[in-house]
Image (cartoon, rainbow, N blue to C red; front, side, top):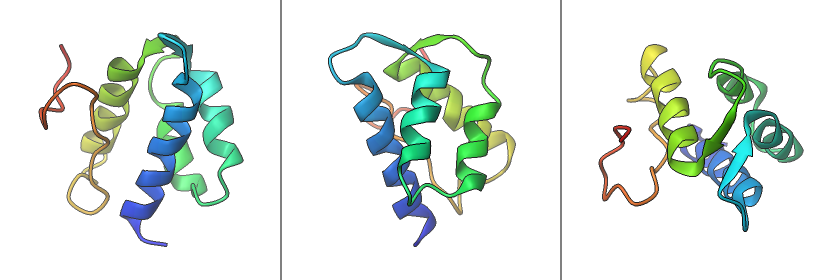
Length: 92
């Protein structure tokens, strides 16, 4: 599985966690992502770095993208799409 395919699986897990909800806990997203067999453990580890809190979809996506950038993986792994950002993945 390619890195992009794994990132797509993570995006799907995030979408599932937020289905019909404005905010979710990081723990809920981790649980959803861990149910996806195609999300590798090293990608799940990205969910251990943001502070445990409730997030909007855009806040969580930005936080995970920050982890990807801190690790220098943006070129190899890519970034998650921030909802409503029209390609701008910066928070706010």
